[in-house]
Image (cartoon, rainbow, N blue to C red; front, side, top):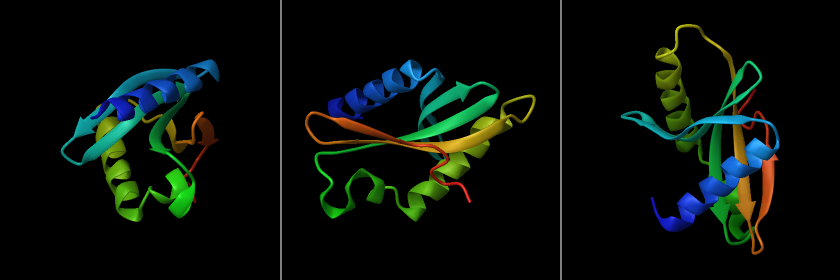
Length: 113
């Protein structure tokens, strides 16, 4: 990962912790995919995709989360959950960071039905 990506994930983790979440893993990787951040909010496990873009041109950070990326996130999350003794409630959030100075948009349940 490059420095800019590391900085974006650190900014996202700090943001979530200020909002009361507990970040339990960063850059969870398995052969099926990667999850930028795994956090806990109460009894809920939150899988977080962090996307950073310089501007909102071309759809900005949100448009960069493709259907293929969502599939890889889901597979990696299933792998993460398979290691746990009990199945927690879970959701997928997106943290979108755009502009300079950076603005953060937090989309809860970003990939929910």
